[in-house]
Length: 110
Image (cartoon, rainbow, N blue to C red; front, side, top):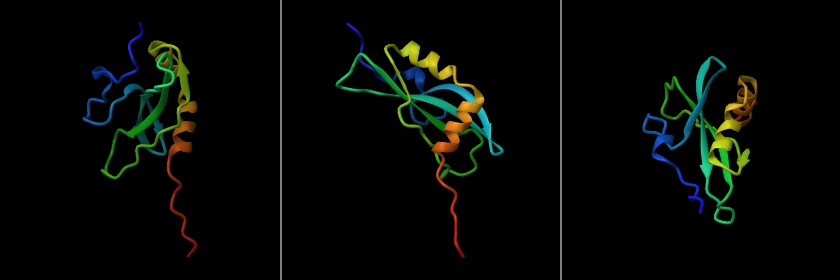
């Protein structure tokens, strides 16, 4: 019998933030961003590991900094396969995902 999909204690960021497995660090727009893999449990499919990517600014200067996330983009049959897939994303792909997950800049029509 397979164990249920659960967050593990070793998947925390170490900064007291939300759970997630750190798998990459990238630079974007003059800032450093840490990429974390977050797993979602699916009661209808406990045999599948579904994950999204969360980006945390490593050099945060404001507690109101966004922590953008992708939608679920990794679906694998094992935890290990999901981690391998995440680690295969190159820096350009991760930066593109970060740009698409960041909020739109404020545009004023003054």
